[in-house]
Length: 140
Image (cartoon, rainbow, N blue to C red; front, side, top):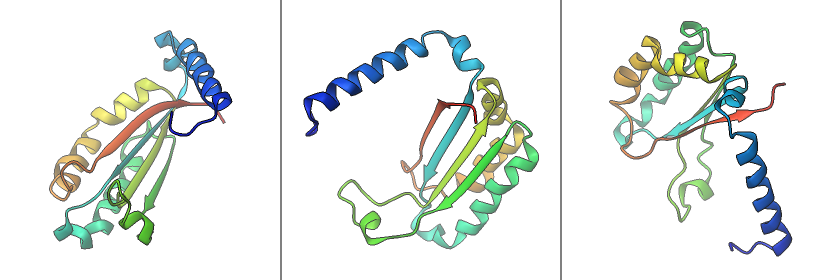
């Protein structure tokens, strides 16, 4: 599979099995630190509006106390990312940390987050470009 050596494939299978066991109860997730990563591209005609979108994201931690830590990244626009066989890179990446799933849900349902999506992001978002994931990370 995908050019993996047998040992790597077995190790990946073992890791998956351990992760399934570790996350078998929802209470384990509820007490863990949660990482939310979202990436997206803006419509071509909105490319000059990246600073407005970034500022909208950077306003969220002041409005949503559940955010413990955050990081904003803008694509470097390297040729390899612009000409990749799977498609262009996203332009913006937003990473946010929460103490637990409840705090993530608070952020997700907050008026500040909903306002950002409806009024700042959605009108500029390239359809189909959003990708996001939430997952558990070890406490630091």
